[in-house]
Length: 124
Image 1 (cartoon, rainbow, N blue to C red):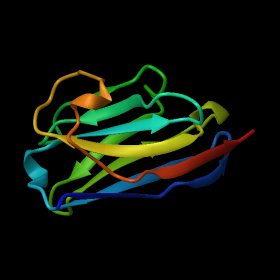
Image 2 (image 1 turned 90 degrees about the vertical axis):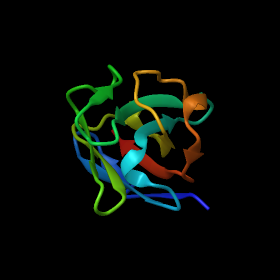
Image 3 (image 1 turned 60 degrees about the horizontal axis):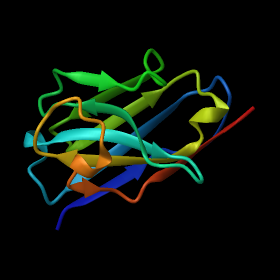
Image 4 (image 1 turned 180 degrees about the vertical axis):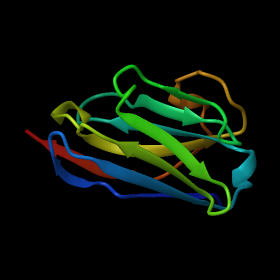
């Protein structure tokens, strides 16, 4: 079965950086678009970034543009999210998702597979 496993979350001070990873198995990773989303306590899951199957095309939420970088290594079946200049409002559980086509649709319901998430907490 498909598994997406996120890692790399933790507690960091404002202004710091984190690199999140999402390791995939059970799917043809190199043909899937991968996205990062986040969900803060009491809020809906929101789009963060997406990357096409070949890594050539990316798209970011305005809230992370200039601070976040999504990348992937298809030889390792892994997608990454580098987050810099972290702010307390970045505090959330971060999830990766997979779907078979690329576009800029930020609706999480368009993703077929999800990981369990990794907690990111940014202290002020």
